[in-house]
Image 1 (cartoon, rainbow, N blue to C red):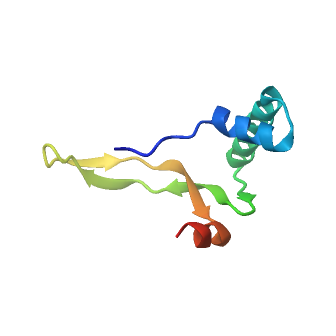
Image 2: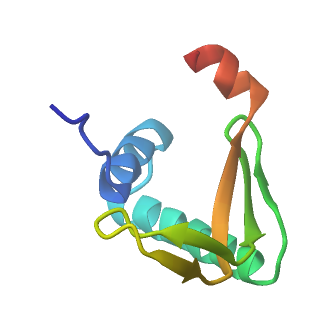
Length: 95
């Protein structure tokens, strides 16, 4: 059985309760944070979130792969991906 997924609305509700905000304000704050992270990642900046980790865009090189169904060799194009590196504090708490 898969672990439950926590949504942005659920996090906003917890944040609103703990900080004495309305759910609407907490949701707007978190959505603004996501928008800001996206803007900085598009510019090529790293986003460091103390206690959580670092988000950054990494360029993946083009490579050859194999279709597992047919065994045929295929070319996989270069692409960008968002990488997350966990902060040491969080890693120590979780692992």
